[in-house]
Length: 368
Image 1: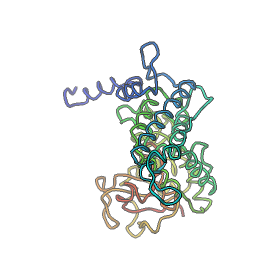
Image 2: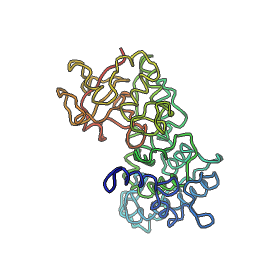
Image 3: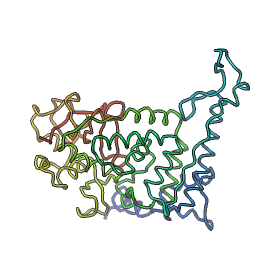
Image 4: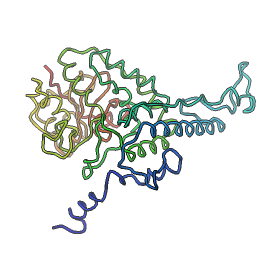
C-alpha cells in the first residue's frame, strides 16, 4: 500500500471527483454570470440539462455576448464577428466620424438565440447551440457540406462538433476520471454545460475569428473508394472520448469506458473494423506503428494522401522511432486536415497552423 505521493492518494483524489463537483469553479462562474441557476439551493451538476434550462441559458448567453460586443464596439476593439467598433471609423464620404455619429449604425447585430425542443439535451445539441450563439453556424454548415460532398457520410453533427472542439468547448477528463466522459449522443450534465459556458465566456474575439477563418478554409480532395471506406469510420467517431489505451467504442476491450487514445484510434479505424489494410499495422503505440516501416517508406508532408497515418513528436524524417520522440498519431483527411484523438476527444485540426504542424515527423501509407 502506498501513501503520500503514491497510488492510494491518487485513488482517493480520483474518488473525490464526481459528476456533480468536478468543475465547481465553473459552476460558480456561470451562476455569478446569470447563465445558469440553482434549484432548491443546489447546482445539481450531475443532473441532466433539460431543454427548458438550455433555452433559458441561451437567452442569458445571447444577452451577455451582446453586452460584451457592445462594450468592445464602444472602445473600438474588434468584436466576435471580426469587425471593428464605431470609434474613429470613416463615413460614406471617407471622412472620420465621431462615435456619436456612428452609434446607431455600428451597434453590434443582435446575437442569435439558439433553441432546442430536445429533452434532455445531448452533448451535440448543446455544442450546436453554442456554435450558433457564437455566430458560426454557417461555417459549421460549410464543414458539414464539404465532408458530405466527398462521400464521407458524416454524422449530422459533424460540422458543429468540429467547430466546438476547435474552440475547445469540451472538457476531456483525465485518465483518473475517464468514467465521467460523455459520448456525443449522451445527455449532457449540468456540470458539463457549465464548463462549456465558462469556456465560451473566456473566449476572446480573436479565438472566434480564428475559428471562422480556419474552418471556412476547410476543403477535402476527391478520394478513392478505399480511402472513403476508412475515413467514413474515422469521421463517424467525431467527438468520441479520449481514453488511454482504448480501442473500442464500448468496454469490449476491458476498459471502464469506450473511446480511444491517439494510436488506438488508428487501430480502431483500420483493425477493429476489419479493413484489409489493418493487417499491416502490428504495433499498438504511435512509436511502434511509426517504426515498423522502413525509412524508405516514410512520407514527407508533401507526399501525404487521405487515409495515411501521421506521426508527431521531436523525431525527424531520418530518426529512429522511439517512445520518447514519437508521442502522437493522427489520420490524414487530405488537403492539410487531420482527424485524431487528443485533448478534445476525436476532433479535427489543420496540419499547418496548429501544434500538429510544428511536431510532424512523417507519414505512413496503409491503403494500397
